[in-house]
Length: 115
Image (cartoon, rainbow, N blue to C red; front, side, top):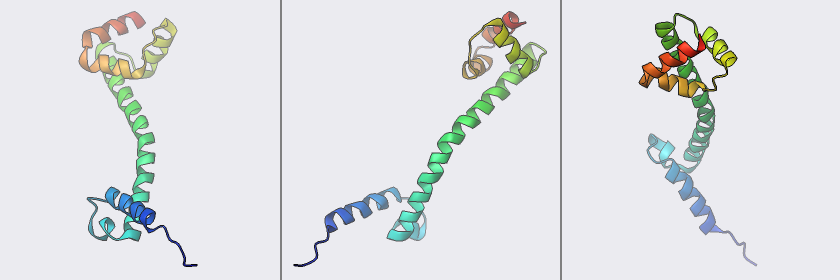
């Protein structure tokens, strides 16, 4: 009996990977083995990047809160956050950073409450 190979599925799998490699430079976009390696490496970087994005945003929020607290309240970020938790205000860093950037009056009110 002749050997049966599912060439339809193999071709579909290769086409799928080559579709993902669209826009890459040189052989990375059209040579199967190179494209496969590049795409898989890219997926690894994308996974890591999704984790790093969260870290980077948290750092950005902290910098914005720190700048605003020094501008409006003459206190550091750490003192502000400590007083914030003691006073029972439950605003997270994302909201505080947004207030500091877009609604300075509201942020100033938070600082007055925390003092």
